[in-house]
Image (cartoon, rainbow, N blue to C red; front, top):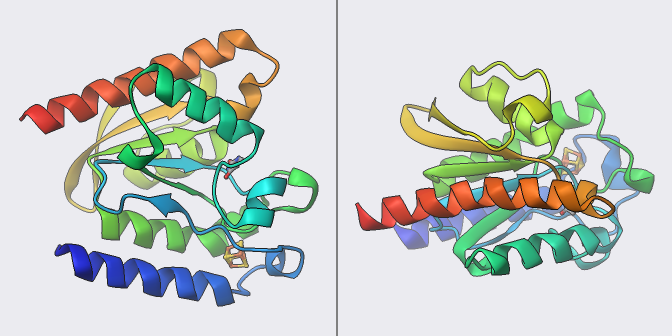
Length: 200
Ligand code: URA
Ligand code: SF4
């Protein structure tokens, strides 16, 4: 798809999200957090839902989970400019509770449309909610994040071949160095996959 058409479709989607009242999270959000980054990126990162700082700024991963994410990206030679980053649910669940299944169901069509516009070759899911959602979308079995994280899965998304990698959520690494190592390993798989696509 042509870059300016992609841009137009994404702007339209962001405008829709800013007016959205499909689930009750609109009532307590300060700002919706549609996502940000390079819409021509080879890779899309998918988190769970905005937290406190994301809600205040309207941008994904700008709080402490974002700091961890940025630190790992830098360590492995990637930057936020190399990726598009968004969440499964676009408005903050009060008190950072887990999103309800009905909220995921209401909101996920926006993620689907973003993926359809960007058409990434690689998708990295952060945490069990977005992993479970994407695994079921491509017909893979998901039982637990610990079972599937740190591996590359080949899958088909709307007829195109993609690589799917799951990771623990960076917020889970706040108090656990070992998990940060595991997240780094998953992100290295993504980096190597990006480099292979760029070289091919
Ligand atoms: N956690 C998420 O899943 N997404 C964000 O944008 C921030 C924290
Ligand atoms: Fe709409 Fe999603 Fe926000 Fe719910 S979370 S109001 S579905 S944008």
